[in-house]
Picture 1 (cartoon, rainbow, N blue to C red):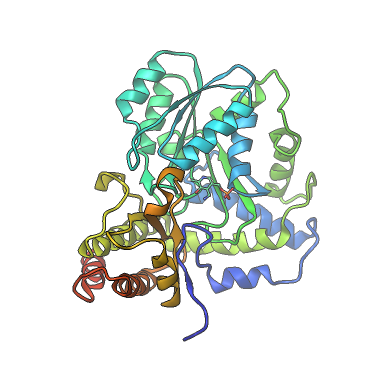
Picture 2 (cartoon, protein in one colour):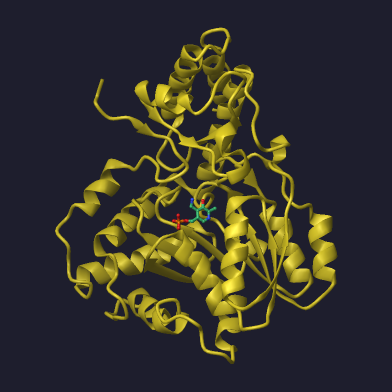
Length: 389
Ligand code: PMP
């Protein structure tokens, strides 16, 4: 035993040693030439990872929820109408957060494992007057992925801005921010972007920045205000020092390293690798006769899986799997929290981590009395990986 378990929760995830090494370098001044270069490069690479060449990146100390709040607070003015398309816990979080912005919020929901369909979204948008459409790219509570491209098209058609919470998706799931017309795409550092927790990452497209620039009411929130951060981001992008709030220097260095690695892999290869990992993991689960939360394969995320415990098995499974070397997460939707578990497979995690996790899962299931042919899940996952190689 190497004395360290695989961290296979849906964030934070496994991180690359070079990223972690970058974090342990001596902390520099945030206005040193070296750091200015790192921050500027990180901002530029973030746009490349989101495929948003004309976007304005923001990197701010905080977690993903800060990125959600920044998007909402900077685009909305009191009384604006917002439509939220929710596929679970994080859609509802956005609904609640938007209500604090004094927006008029309408939230479409769906049964567990599903997402509101596009016809429903269009029917609501057709009623008119929506300033913002908000969706979650992958809802981490259900592993349901929304159809970001179609939602972006609908928002454009009905004159709304489109904000997409990509916290559990960005740098893993396919997303072409500029081509698809996603006005704000946002995430946090600790998931497929591959850096320990602590940064909110957001890229705003030209329409979003125009809406911000044209607002009449001041942004309610000082730390949130683009007006405070925009000159700082623009200065670092131009190789100049600037200050509003002290940047998380070591995390930004780690971000530079991780984004370099992501771009070296290439976005197309990265989207494909995540799709293959998701598919292989689900093939393994199906071979063990386990049922997933997403009600259709087309809704199943590439970056994580959400799986019901089979009959006779409960949350004790997590401890059994952990004893065998992989850390998984429990359920998150309050009403069914005790009935399912979640597994992250994104970022630096690769196919060998996936197979090791399935092996540990088979061990845990067998220990709790679930019957299946030993190695069935492993074989199915391996077949899927080999077929997609
Ligand atoms: N949105 C989604 C889809 C998430 O998965 C998470 C985190 N699990 C968040 C938002 C919130 O991010 P954070 O925990 O970093 O605030």
